[in-house]
Amino acid sequence: MSTSESVNLMRHSHGRNHFQLRWGSEEKHADTWENVVLFSRQRTPEWIAEHTERLRSLAWSRPFPNAITNLVYPVLASS
Image 1 (cartoon, one colour):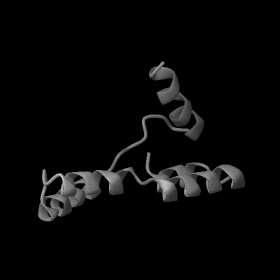
Image 2: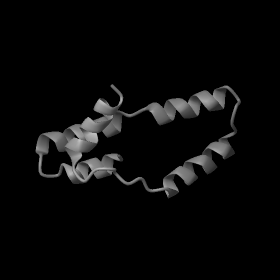
Image 3: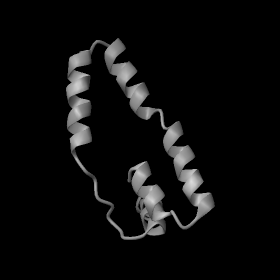
């Protein structure tokens, strides 16, 4: 679920809304991935730019209608 979707789902809860905003702003996995593939010379900057555009063009839909189910389900499913 994207940060914007999470924020929209939790708009009624000030605390959860701010938690989602902070969580989303601190996500660094994409930056780390980009640095790894660049410095390992496994991908070119052009490939990364094209890949990023492809990812941004796809929309992900949340599997459940409410925020708490979308949060709890992955935890229980991975147990």
